[in-house]
Image 1 (cartoon, rainbow, N blue to C red):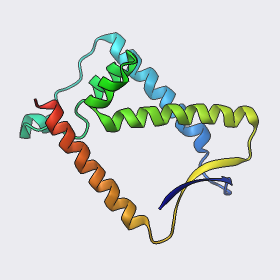
Image 2: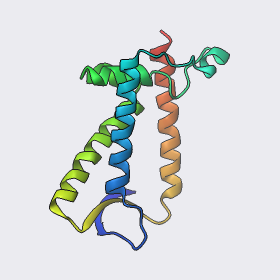
Image 3: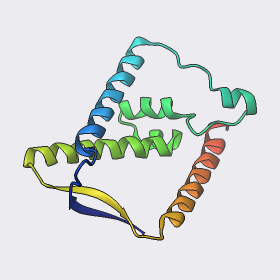
Image 4: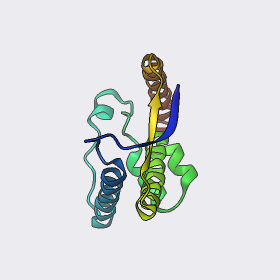
Length: 140
């Protein structure tokens, strides 16, 4: 269904090995500065309206746990955000090795033709399970 392959860059293709690590490092620096400033985040509109957490609730607590290197607690607060941050960290490390080696082959995900619908359904189910976990863990 979903495979990781190595291939040369297509003409005009976005340079993912440059763009995403820069976005990750910039976002991490912004979050670090925000945490150090002591500014508060605005209240979640969705939780005030419904009493249930939104898909983003718990992300700040997850980030604070990641900064303290408490990976288990970070995963419990927000599994999706924790996995995205860990994936971004691994992608940044891969990109550094890619640039240092001056590699010509790039890692890319490949979806077999006709499998995109299954992948979308699986992603939707994963989001539903994730939200159910947040409703359970963050409201108890």
